[in-house]
Image (cartoon, rainbow, N blue to C red; front, side):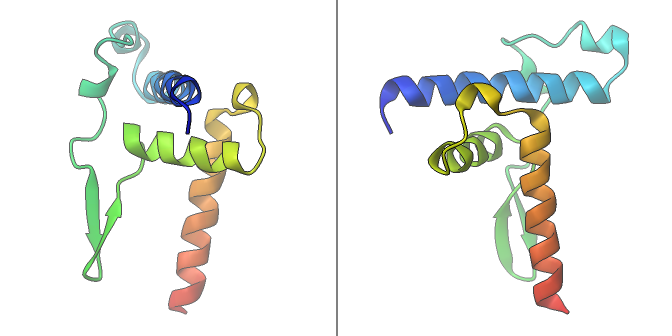
Length: 102
């Protein structure tokens, strides 16, 4: 991808993760979350293991950027991507994994 688009995707991922963090903490803690320090509030483990396979953890910066890139490649406008779109992809993925196990 071009540098300009990559920068925009990183900016969008930051905005979405900040929005998500502020939605799960109390109001007084939400005021402390800024663009400079939001990564310290994200999960520390970037990968998780399930049945001897490593997966990228959910709600990490890399997870957000990868899913935004997937949506952009499918033709979704970068400005229209919201937290709900990423959560929908997450639900879709877990539903597919559960059906393959059964």
